[in-house]
Image 1 (tube, rainbow, N blue to C red):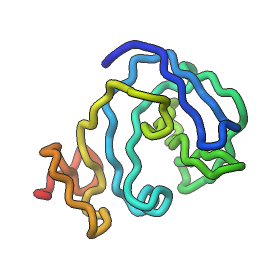
Image 2: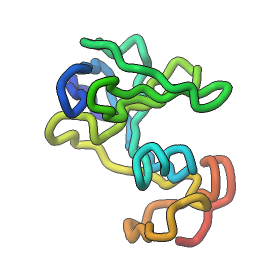
Image 3: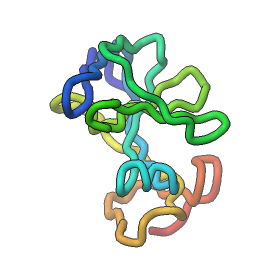
Length: 136
């Protein structure tokens, strides 16, 4: 993990954030909810909420008993996923400029859109990381 401040935000600039945490790798989530939210898959990296400074108020959609998705109420940009574990899963595409991050795996690959065929050689898990890997 690399330690450096990173800034990001939505398309229109109404919600901006800054992290002060060593971000880990990006994970691609292909679950049905992420597919519908993004049109393909979500690429996110975990950051503790107490390491994020927000400027603006994201809107929230409760997508499950434990999960919610944060987005800009003006432009609709998807910014955060939260599971109630103290972490914000920050959408990698919401970060400004070069991130220096890399992707480490595909999760919920069994739910991917039939148009997705990653050729990146990363592990693809049928569901969560604790489950079996599948052959892309």
